[in-house]
Image 1 (tube, rainbow, N blue to C red):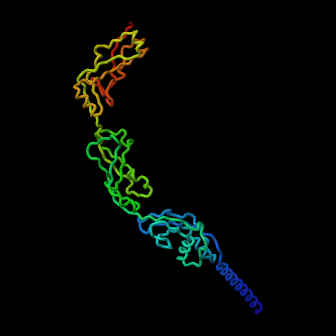
Image 2 (image 1 turned 90 degrees about the horizontal axis):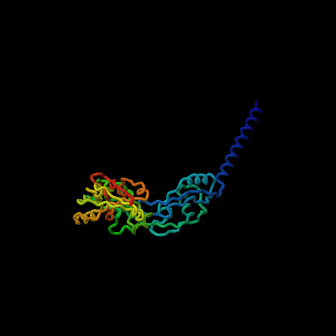
Image 3 (image 1 turned 60 degrees about the vertical axis):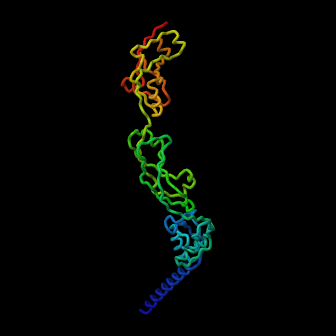
Length: 343
């Protein structure tokens, strides 16, 4: 019985010694100091919202050479996998405006030291980075509507909201009468009815004089609504005098034919013109003597076929003026009755 007991004790002792040896070896392996790379992203953030701009704002894939026991290195590498936010004024990063050269190994050492792990940072790649810190200011500014050249409106042009908040570099904050533009384009106005109120949501923009600073300015909100009623600035004139109809075509062909306009079609009555208000007023001031003529253009084929009817194809009118109706019909091409004979 004693021999069996002694054998068991020897086996237990051997196993215990082996476990202790293994634990000692694992502890020693864990405590052996090694140097390994660890990677992270550093993001520079302002201490308070919109207080400063930092450029560049990020160091991507920073390689830190860390030295220490394996377990500690692994723990540091795990924490560094998440981006690290660094605020100027901490970890040795200056908070004063201006350019600064940042030693990235020292920055890494300061970050790792806060975790109280037996690891040191012995190098970094890149070794350093130059950053620029600029103070920012927040202002509330007025929004003004800007319309395409020549567009006329009736009533008040409204902008909603009337003001916006901008965050901009401190050197621009002192600009007097700073404002944002809610710029309506020709495309926005295309096809819009005159005399009715319309709404346009348009982006807010800096004045052209500050266009070069667009990237450094933040605008909130980004858009505004412009409300306006378009004034066509046009007027109509119903001619009191009839408009004569004349025949036009190749002179050589017309020499061989006689073309007569039916007396009932020789003059067009109740012709209504539409055009710029100033032009229409000048025509009105002439008391009917406006010099408007309607032309029917005949081709060689028209003459050979001796057509009996053809619409007005051309009007002699002041620039910008059009014919909207003739004889109560909404047309600018009334049909004219003709009689064509060979000479």
